[in-house]
Image (cartoon, rainbow, N blue to C red; front, side, top):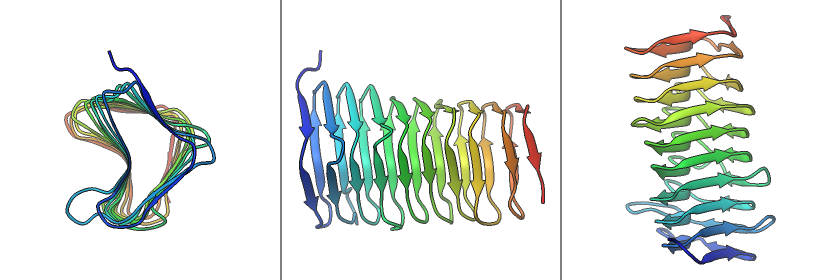
Length: 231
């Protein structure tokens, strides 16, 4: 079983391209402690990553992860759980093409803040589970607040997921979605809840921006127990 840990109790700033703030493999825990900052630069071909874990039991961010264009806050490969706690902030300071948390086959839990610019993904997980209790803000143009690849299930328990124009709030490929939180769009032509092959249930109020879609499904079942307001 995994053992050992990496704890950041200081400040890490690697502003050059293609940088990794903390890398750990085969560990029990990688953590960025409350009030501490990991900052990395832009990503051009490979990836700049704030925290990169491979075959790790848990990655936890209680502090701040800051990164540049095309980069990722947390990257988990074979990580059991990834947690952005209530004191955690993940941001690219309005840069583009970023991902707050990327994980494969993981449980991802967000209780903090994820704030990204255009063409970005707040949380992207393949074949896992995403539980959101915090606030996620992304920009325009093919951004997603929470995206589940493969069979990922999304549970948006609370908090605010806000996207810009031509973007999607909650989206899955084959997984299911349950929304109890607040979904907002600051622009036009956005989709609030989308599943390609899975089912979705909305239990809250969706107030649609212009030219937008509240719930969009293909073979799956879209169920609304809340309110969808169309302007």
